[in-house]
Every structure is written in structure tokens, then in C-alpha cells.
Length: 95
Ligand code: SF4
Image 1 (cartoon, helix red, strand yellow):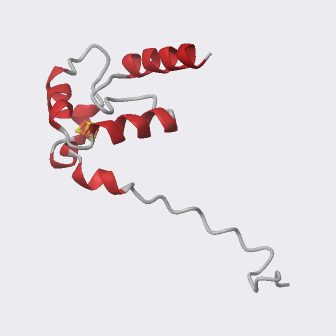
Image 2: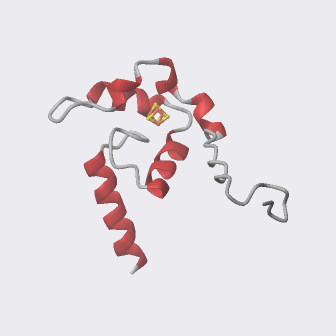
């Protein structure tokens, strides 16, 4: 049996392919050990935050993390806790 598109109706839909946003090509963390951006609980984030501070796509990275609800790791120079606080401030400002 075929669908109007010619695709078999019982054939699973092709999974969406995730493509990295263009800005990720300029990410400084792409040149380092990515695990450093996902420290274990209690581990310092000072070194990676210093790298984020120099990153040319910091703003894009942070907004990507905020928009996608990234729960773990350092994104845009902010830790999970700092992003949660930012989200709360934004919600408060919007109310
Ligand atoms: S700002 Fe984002 S893209 Fe840039 S180094 Fe930090 S985590 Fe990586």
C-alpha cells in the first residue's frame, strides 16, 4: 500500500535530522575537550567560563540554550543554575 506521496504507509517516517546551527562553527569549545563544559557536580567552571567570555558566539550560544531548555553544562558562559536564574528574571520582566 502506498501513501499519496508514494511512500509506503507502513514505513516509519524518516527521523528529523539535527543540523548544528551555523554559529556552532565558531564556538571556541569546539576546539577543546567538550566534557569540560559538562563538569561533575561541585567541579569548578571557572576555566570554561573564561573561554566562553572570549567566544565570538557567546550570545547565540546562550540564546540557543535558553530556547532549547538545555539543562546541563555551561552554555554562553552560564551554568545551569545561572540560566535558571536568568529564565526566572526574564519571566518576571515579561509579567
Ligand atoms: S559561549 Fe558557548 S559556544 Fe562559546 S565556548 Fe562557551 S559554550 Fe562554547
